[in-house]
Length: 209
Image 1 (cartoon, rainbow, N blue to C red):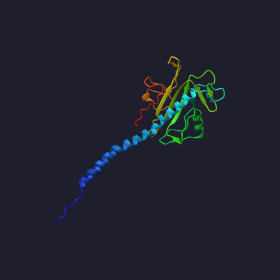
Image 2: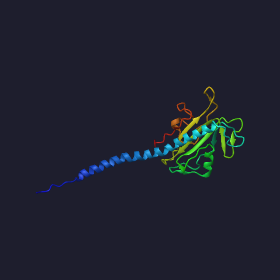
Image 3: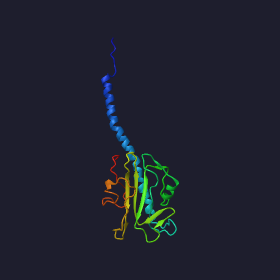
Image 4: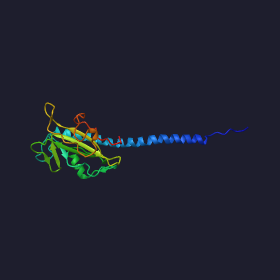
């Protein structure tokens, strides 16, 4: 009795390989994009944490330095952590922890983002501290930048909190979102009318999203 041969033909194997190649060409770029989105989510999470720390500070009677005003927001000069935003995490230095801990905010390890705070509407007295170096004010903006995709475009997240009167109207000026990254989606570094007070939003048009 003649035994019939079983198996795949060369054409069938080539078809399978082609299908796998097409699926990989679709799936791998999406997977890499999802990875970048996951890393970038750190910025929103940390900006939300900074905002909560700042609000807690403003509503307390904590004195940040001798003769400093209370019931205000605190803004530090420069980025925390210091350095340059790249596709790699930035390791925090002792000076970074000092500035962050001034508002009772801290992180563990390193971060993809660099974080900025800026204040406006300075109080009549006690408007700054020298140790640590902080500005104090009644309006606040928070910015965070990163370059996790390494394309030299600094993606940016922003949040604004203006000073409000008892009638709910804005008093004075709210500082621009600090950081110097891409804020084209928000129409620039000033708070757009479509973004609520304290609302953390991605202002970048970077194509990783």
